Every structure is written in structure tokens, then in C-alpha cells.
Image (tube, rainbow, N blue to C red; front, side, top):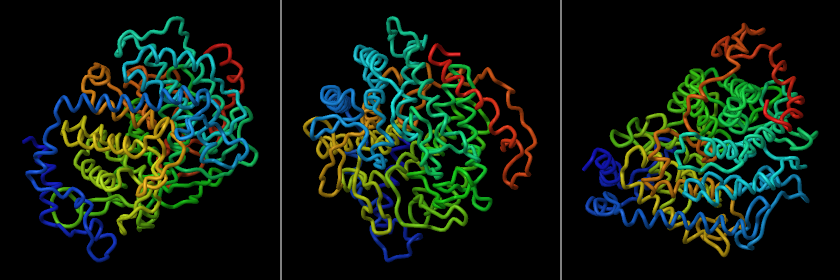
Length: 576
């Protein structure tokens, strides 16, 4: 048995046998003992060997086909019943667009911009599945039918990761001379997707204006700019997870504007971290720089901020990004991680990451959310595979219990706090990345379990529906675009060992929306080198901020922002 299998035996068998009544977070809660989350894996060693130590090739082929069919059942029905609207209502078999009658319905309007969201978000998944013909058809449809000149108020973060990121990814794949997916050149393609990405990014830029901190407003109207009634509060992830897409766009077109504003926002947030703990909060006032939400965790409001620090470093090679991520990771391990030091040995409970007060590290509540399930995948990218294995086991234990991940789970009560599951991809993503790192067949079994659960619990007449209640499996009539762009993509890749993505000499990373971009030398070069040399700031920064981290006051609203509106005209007639 290989080292990874031995580790799993220790994790799932030895711990259960030696601590059958252990309380997952007894060190945290101090309550009477309850069953550990590992108790959901209670099977004897022989049973473990039989079930998890292998995964037949024929079964892998079957699961790959099942993942492919799942994607096409959702995609084909979207195209049949919903396109050109943004989403599919899979129960009613009809399309869904922005809620124009209720502009305050941000659950819908933050995401849906009346720009065929699901089709755009799914572009590179079609290529991953090897369907070049449909990929070409979809690209042409996007070019011919989608416009961003819409009176739609959308969240900057959502438009960036779902639309901008997909357009950039599809453009890069279409024009990659190395042809990792074969000859996929589209006749007469003239960089239209890149032009569209540029157009959208320009329409998002007003969010960065008239903010005294450099942290952007959370929403913009694609035609009119920042709404006059816009709030001055935004979440850390929303404001600090723009750098990958904006940075790639800047380096593709040779215009520093987009990377500059995104990087400025990241630095502004970073400079607001606690001097005591090194942690950030989850909601900040963009004018005062005061933390409105002081909760620090790994889930909603914070997740992709950490993710993009590391992925920006991988893509762009900027040492400052790596330094920030390393410091953030150290603070996370010091203040959010509870439980014993090692995952599979020693005294105490298996580790868990909790929500704490950013200023003192004290626990603020006893729940975690499903978005946090992305973190094992990030730990894999960071080389911390043992901690990734352990945290993933916690989330899979919850999935195994409910056949889905509740939006919030109370680790003290060992029960859901918020019961819905909107087909999120985070656990699947971490499962895929852990399989790539370990090649342990256990993760193929996890993927099969997830696939079968989705097929059983979420499939409806015209697609896959959000679970309103993970216990009784009642449903809501919504299929979010990330189900096709991420959940199905990761499931398919998990079982497709021979996918060109895995065989290519090129290396790729996934954006936070699951769009693939190559780790390419051209993204480590920029034509505006030394445009903004390090200067002494006007005001002395706090002790934990180096002089080169702060943007001097006189620099904050000079070039490149002053030329934004000129570029709004220029980009219509060609990339500068």
C-alpha cells in the first residue's frame, strides 16, 4: 500500500477505533463529547481496503460519461429553453434574467446582467469536454448576440469572475499557438472575445473612482456607472478578488489600468489588517477604511481574497503577492485553525478552521459555510497536502451525511444552520485537486458519491435545481451558471485522466470561477515596467506596512485613471 493509502488508514480507521466518541471540536466548544465528524466514515479496515483502495478503469469511464451527460443535460436545456437569458429555471423549463421589478433583489441582480451569463460561463467547459464544434458555435453566438451596453446594475466581483474571466480564458485558448486542445482555430476570429472583455472591464472601472481608499464600490450599472444610491460597504473577497482577470487583461492588451486598480484595492485591504493578528475582516467601508464586519474566516466574504493572492503570484510572479499570501496563511494557521497540530496523530481533535474576531482571534460563532470547502484545494497549491486532506475529510463527512453541503453547518451542534445547497463546486474542486496531488483512488470514490448524489437529489425535468433543504431535498427553481462552469467541469476532469489539460506540456490554473488560464511567461512580463516606482508615502504607515506598500496620496487618482473615459471611446474602434 502506498504512503497516501497508509495515511488514509490512519485518518479514517485508526482515529475512529481509538476515539469512537471523540468530539470534533471539544477544544473549541468545551461541551460534552459528541461524535467526531470522522465517525461518518465508520467502516472496518477490511471494508476500507475493499471500497477505497482501488477504482476500476471501467468505472472511471462510466463516471466520466455520467459527468459529461450531467453537463449536457443542463447545457442543452439552457440553450433550448432559456438562451439568450442569463439562467435556466430547470423546474419550469424557462429562462431567468434580472429582476427588473425589484432592483433590491441583489441575490438575482448581482449576478444576472442580461448578457447570456450561462452560455458565456460555460465556454471553456465545452472545450474541456472536447466539443470543439459546440465551442465554436457558442463563441459565435456570444460575439453576435451579447452586448454589455445594458442598463443592468451588477456586482463587480460576479461580472469579473463569471463573464470577464470566461471571455479571457476562451480567447487565450482560441489563440494559443501551442494548440493544447488540438487545432481549435475559429475561422475569421479577430480577437472579438478580447475586445468584449476589454469593453466589460472599462464598464466596471467606475467602481474604483471616488473612493478614498482605492477599494471599489461593490456594484456598477453597465451603462451609467456607480448608482447614486450605492452603499459604501463591500466584502473583502468582492473587492480583493479582481487581480487575476484584470491582471491578465492588462498584460494581454498592454494597458496597466486594470491591473493597477485591482492591485491597488488588494494593497488597500492588506494595509487594513490587524497589527495584532495579521487578519482581515469580512466587510469594510470603502471611504473610511473602517471594518464594518470584523469576522475573519475562510468562507463567504473572504475566501477568494486568499485564493487570488497565491494565484496572482503563480501567474504574474510578483514577489509581493507571495509575501502577502505567506503572511496571510501563517495568520490563518495561527488564529483560525483549532485542534491538534498534526491531522492524523497526537492528542486532541482533528483540525478545523473557525470564524474569529480579526483583532483578537476569539471565536465569534460556531458555524462554517460551504464556500470554505475550497480551502483544501488552495492548500494543495500551497504544498500543504496533509492539512488539505484533513479539512477535505471534514467537508466530505458532511456531504456523506446529507448528500449535499448545507450553506452553513454548525460544528458545535453538528447540524445545518442554513439548509440550502445551490449546486456549489467547492468540495468537487478540492476533491479534484487532491486527486491530482495524491492519485489516491479515495478521491475518485468521493467524486462518484457526489455525482450520484447530484443525479439523485438535484435532477429535475430540464436540468439540476438548487436544493432548498438538504434534509428533505425540496428544491428551488434555479440552476446557477457555476454548476456548468465549475461543478460539472471538475467532476469530468476528475475522471478524465487523458484530458488534454492533463497531458499538455503547458501548466494551467483555474480562476475562482473555474476558468482555465495558462501559466505563461507572457503574463510575467508587462510593458509598463517602472511606470509607478516606489516612493515615500506622505503619511507614515502603520508599523506592519512597508513604505512601498502604500500608494502616495498624490498618486491615487492620477494616470492611469484619468484616461479611463478616453479609453471608453478608443476600445470601441480597436485595442490600443
